[in-house]
Length: 212
Image 1 (cartoon, rainbow, N blue to C red):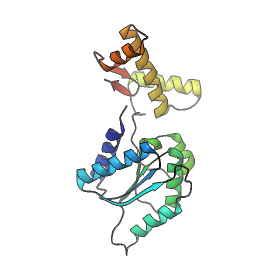
Image 2 (tube, helix red, strand yellow):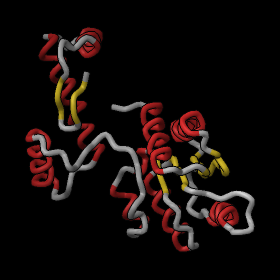
Image 3 (cartoon, one colour):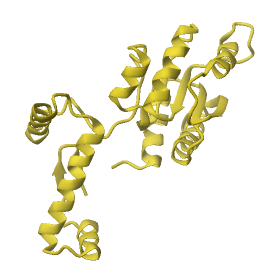
Image 4 (cartoon, rainbow, N blue to C red):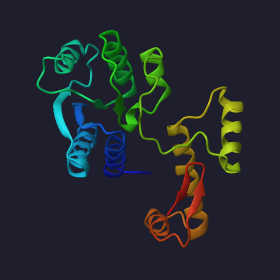
């Protein structure tokens, strides 16, 4: 499972590839979301000298982003000395969906990127389809043609009546990898399981890919 540094680096690389030079960064008052945002800013500046033209923390309970969006919109004004090429939003899918919907209603149509917290169907529930085009990192590729993934996807939909999500696939792999370690190490002792996981003789393949 990618850690925060890997996730933020990938998104910074994406911003570089897209040519997003001036970026607004928002993150909730939660340690994990703040860490992702700060690493993203650091990597963006080191990779392609990006300018963080707006940097704001918001409450983890926020549902009204009008003040923040008004400030961002002022930077998009033709009379402003700077501009914004894209927004990076680090937080939960519910707030991300609300933020995106409010941004589009206010006429802000620049690209929006997000942390893995936005990688959820909940984003669509709260954005009412205005999130189309939003880019977020994911450890789960729904276009995977590997038979192991396809079987998991079919079985999941049959049992639960809906498509699998990143979290469901990661949870499935976590249990599968744990079972593999117990079987391979022939032990239920936590320390011995941890040792087996740390020194796997070869990569274990799950529905999200190979785990080393």
